[in-house]
Image 1: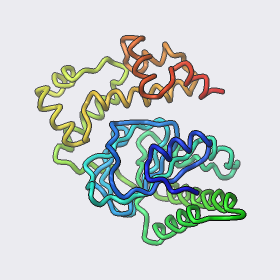
Image 2: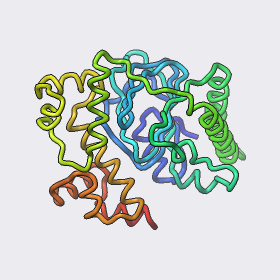
Image 3: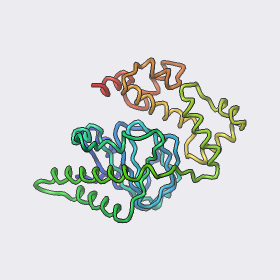
Length: 286
């Protein structure tokens, strides 16, 4: 299997082939804004980094940390060391895992069967780190006759391992908030996610928390690495994708996500996802 040096290329291959793809990165690509994409992501840190914002949770990134992110969860990698940031990023098409799951073993479980307050991070032991890299190397070095079977079987073994680790450990893990504005930003994130149906503005948040608009924008950016407006937009699109996949109409989704302008919702969704809400709903429910 080809080892990509770009997440975007891996995502494109994953979606095009309805399969999985692996990117091995050493330096930071051009930083993406808060974003979502139509495939699962497994992010494994080899050298460690600084911080991950996934939906409304902030995480430190240490060597051996692994993150599982589904196609509805907005995420943003921030404040990384651009000179030393080695990691493995696996993009996985949800249909590929469904196709290989059984009644006893749902390989989508670590991405979908989660409580709302579940964490996304697994801190792998040294043995688990070695096993993870063993499977990755086996997938990437398979050649000649039978290489496609070796790639697929090794990947499925890897997913069995990760689902087993996730089921055994995620309940006991706690969320992490490492920045100096922890409590204030935590409360702001919690408020935003509880009032997503409302037409939230920076002015509204400023008044609610008795903070100036400049101060609330500054501490939010300092803690999360992104702006309030970018975060709001990414979360609303993330929620919209999930609701459309559940069968709600475009009009209902527009209202549920806090858009008071239907045309603005259509334009924003299409720009972020690449297709209109109606087409996304049709593909998701086909």
